Image 1 (cartoon, rainbow, N blue to C red):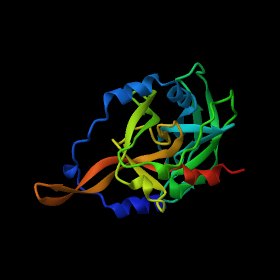
Image 2 (image 1 turned 45 degrees about the vertical axis):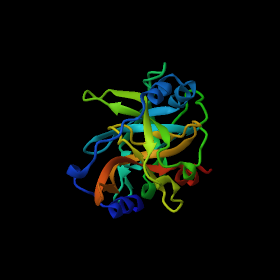
Image 3 (image 1 turned 135 degrees about the horizontal axis):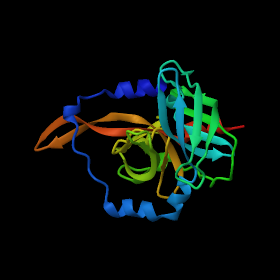
Image 4 (image 1 turned 180 degrees about the vertical axis):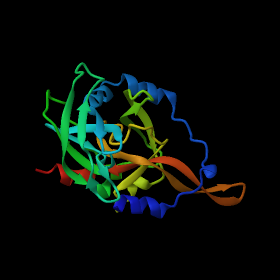
Length: 242
């Protein structure tokens, strides 16, 4: 509920007010595709498919320990009630040589931060992910995201995507969240956000709008930017403690 209250307090302007997103520079995108450290981080990414009583939710998770995957709570439960509603959870890595699918279960969760930890039977070793300090991110700093995009036929494609820190959202030490632009597509929920040192700094929650005050031609007016809300990795540390 904390996450929902924070988003509600920011207000939700109408879509007509949304400005055109500024594109990220192409060289940075190309660097992501060829960077071996980014490919290593992708090796720790999982596709997650969750069966609920009335629907199937799909997303991404990151391996953060032997047999442990960190992901978004709303994939496995109801963020309003905090109840886990998943009937069946399957994790897979179709972007690797392993084409199987393994059952997983929720072992820890914090609905207030939209975080859940899944446990599965590990079938190999995964690259260890280093955690970074999200409070050291700066406005306009480039980051990259790892997640799945699910097509209409249900196929999930994993790829690294560019992102940019919006405002000074990451510098607010009192907030469990920070904001990146542009917004994410369906399937990136639960994916990882990395700084340029290849450190995991957050877990993708959901899209929202970020209010802005714009000065133009001597006039000041309010507008909004479509963004993705990210939970700081610090919030996940207590869940991962033994």
